[in-house]
Amino acid sequence: MTAAPQPKPEILAAFEAAKGFMPAGEGLALYAAAAEAAALGLPLLEVGTYCGRSTILLADAAREAGVTAITVDHHRGSEEQQPGWEYHDPETVDPEVGRMDTLPTFRRTLHHAGLEEHVIAIVGRSPQVAKAWGGALGLVFIDGGHTDEHATGDYEGWAPHIADGGLLLIHDVFPDPADIMTGQAPYRVYLRALESGAFTEVSATESLRVLRRTGPGI
Image (tube, rainbow, N blue to C red):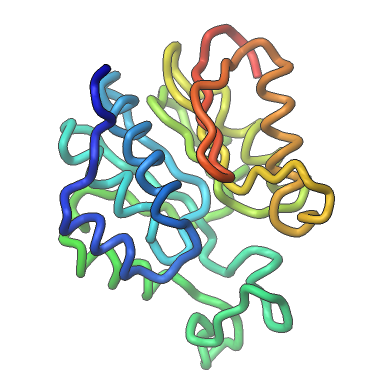
């Protein structure tokens, strides 16, 4: 059995040093999926940049294959990252406007990893960007907001663009209803993708699900 592709030590070190929430095990699964999908010769797209921790892995896999990594985020933070919530980080607040702005941290993350030239960063809201997007994608990684509105919007906006044989990755999939703020909406999107008949599960690593497009629709 062929071993899964692994990021270079310096890329893994940059990932682990970056601000963010994805654990290393999920990161390695993300990288392996990105490396596989990149062989289709199509862009790899991430919804939910935050500070660029997972973007590092997508960008390196894209660089190795000669394709482009694209990451979409409004950079104002998701629900659980706002002041007063568990995942709020005061360092990401713009003192001039009093709102979160993770874009400067993201840019520093890519700079330190040496990956600025291999990523297209789109600053905007996912459904709005998806409506303007016209091309096929080899991979879509949904890691944005955790409300049903946001998770469903990400799925309905981007899943139609996944090419035949391409991969759909969904992060923070938690079946336990106790995880309502972090994983119930992604879990429902995951179930919807499976029930659609358009996607078949490839792997599950902690809260990361990898599915392949094996049929039409969403």
